[in-house]
Image (cartoon, rainbow, N blue to C red):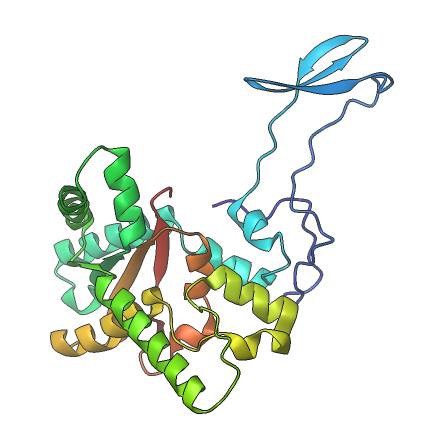
Length: 273
């Protein structure tokens, strides 16, 4: 992924990217041309500027992932750095290194590669390639195993656990006669926005239940690790998610295990990565 655009100027690693810093990439403007009388028209193949000198197609502006995530002043530059570590290139680098270690017989450094696939991107891929969901799951699982995955899991059990935990939390709030307003915590973009924009006004109403992605992180780095007889740090956990904000969620310090010295989710990719 690319770096932040030049429009985002940071003064300190702890500074938040404020809404006043527009997340756009400025295009070069030829100041020698007169701006008098020009107008913008929309056509099927794009936007055009019409002036006395003629009609010219406007350059398309590119926006990076970090620009998109930062548009509401949600992330710090430090979090931006963590997000850049979660990319297709980084994933392939880890897979290649793991295969090299296996080939060299250096088994002490080989990591167990685990992929967790969310339901939404699986359905999207099934639709894209005109396949049934189960057939798409088999194709995707086989492809990931070919790349070097040791295990390919689904978030289905974590989805169910998240719903059950949210229900239990709501019941407990009701019994305590607290405010019955309870908002979901599954969307990391929403949680980040609430934390850094509205603070205590909204936070008491947000459920404390982990999202399905992070529930799977615990199941993989703790339960699966115990079953395999390895440390959680020896597992490289990749999730395939429907939203880029899941990268930001996996980067949160809340989901770093001091016991395992690793994050519950090491890398997040999406079906559009």
